[in-house]
Length: 221
View: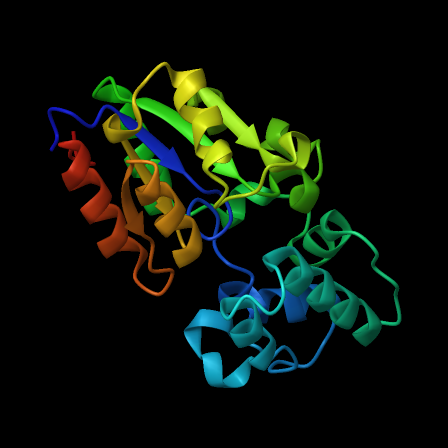
């Protein structure tokens, strides 16, 4: 497989950046809330998060989920948050680099060093994080392509969304390894011929080891 896979295509939230669930205690401290206030844990403990289960069951969209959580969290501090960049900036501060997975950075460096192409395929990169955050993440300049449905308006798992990436990279789908933490998006990628890794946010090291193995690279190179 490594001889044929020459591009790494990553989702952003959860795959490159840590999930909001993983940083609840830091978020509570930033907002001045008692520890344990934010008890919804998504994939880390689905039983605590009926809304997450609704999203996984396609009763609501991922965007709906996060808009609801943003509004709820804002109300806890007496504020009305109508957009996701406000939510993320208030709970994470002004340094997005602190939330980037070290495993992601290692894999990105190794892929670039090995001559693999790099792409991001996100449903809501700038919608969630705001347009200015990219300037605070220098490693994004290593990517050959960033496709963001904030602008294309075509969401994963629509086959066209993956086509934007393969066309921009100039590669057939079967030469790409796609990584996402949402199963529906993995299914969509496989349906167009991409190799895909369903990223386990509870085991990021193991997931990235699998990804690097598929690309035939070593993060220690």
